[in-house]
Length: 355
Image (cartoon, rainbow, N blue to C red):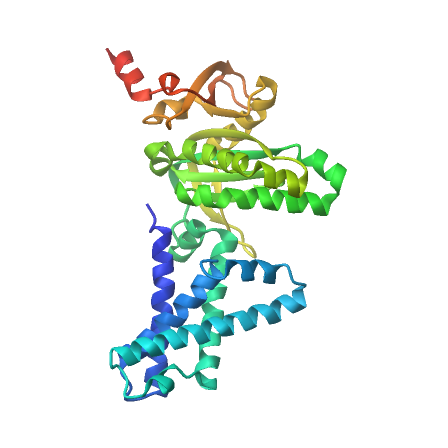
């Protein structure tokens, strides 16, 4: 399993602290290295907390709604304020623990040189974070370590989530409003996917493709939990969806897993791509939802590999069906909410079959 996402943020903070240490070496010879480390860590932490919406999230949301030219100015001013706050916090800590001979006023004062250096460092770190956000955390790490520079055979779980009725929404409200609608739906996926250890591989029109390495997706049935976490989150915000868009999103979902070849492809634009029957079959299963009249489907192959289903979820078999481009029929099941006494427990079922 690749390093957890939290390791990335630890490294970003250490990079900020290292930049503070480097500042002391270059511009403040004789000053305590620990003081520079503390300043850098505090400034990096405040900038990162603001960028991730941990502090002043409302201000950040308002800034993002500004026109482009005003957004740049407002965002820069906001980062300056965060750097100044971090410098004040760092100065307070440095003065409290006697890491400097300066008085408190001098220790917390922001000089033009410190501000310029901090802005340059913050700009570089925020750029790295933006690149990670753009291509996805797991993909970013894989690019950095060159994991898929040569093709790798592995097993993965795929979850396809299709937004139902997006074409009709676009016809009724226009393409710009439809894009806003889809953007809001896809934004809703982010936290459940992150919490369940998945990675959003791509958005294709109104379809989101989410994936896990097989072991990670099977553990605690994370791939299934993720699906129902997304559905629950949409249901919980139904009133807000109706007020904003006049409708509550409906999703069609397909789950399948198997062997794929994963490789880094492209020349001018690089991408980590998955090749193999598992991806195509997941797409065919998603297309099968409509004729079967269900919102979620999972292949029996993947269902049999799960250690169990999340509490309150049961699987109902829908038999084997022919899929376009595949010779043998594939058995599928739909996942439904069920009472505790109707939840499908796979391990007991396997044990009974073995007997």
